[in-house]
Amino acid sequence: MSKPSRHNAILKIVEQSRPANQDELRKALVRVGFKVTQATLSRDIRELGLVKSSEGYQFAPGAPAPIANEQILPSANRLVREFVLDVREAQNLLVVKTAVGSAQPVAASLDGEAWNEVLGTIAGDDTILMVTEDNRAAHRLGSRIRELLA
Picture (cartoon, rainbow, N blue to C red):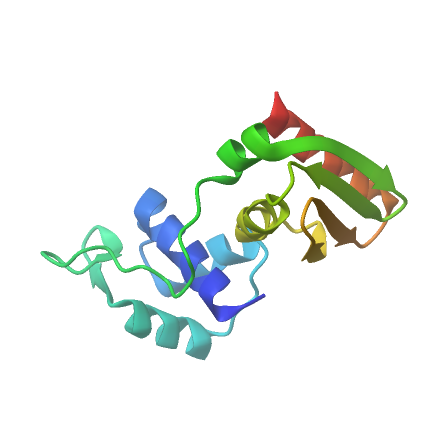
């Protein structure tokens, strides 16, 4: 997974739970699909300008919250509800049909979720192809996206 995706995941974790130490932060990253070394995590913390306080890692006081080097998109929940028309499984693949011109932003927002089931995503104009490890993972992923449609 990309560095900007990892940075976004770190920012979400810090915003939601303020991990007390690097090991807590590393474990939270593992839970969302990122395996990082201590050296990489230290570098990420420094690059994002996070500081450790008695309450855990947080954004530097008085500074605006950092933004990772990715375009900020609306939530996957919103984009799926607005633009996804159909979700179909084909063995370990998931084909997601969207409104014309909507596949790219929907795919980007789904990638940003960093779901463990997703090995890769390709988006065209109105179709997204999501590759998973096996049929069960494709089924779980399809169910998760269908839940967002509801």
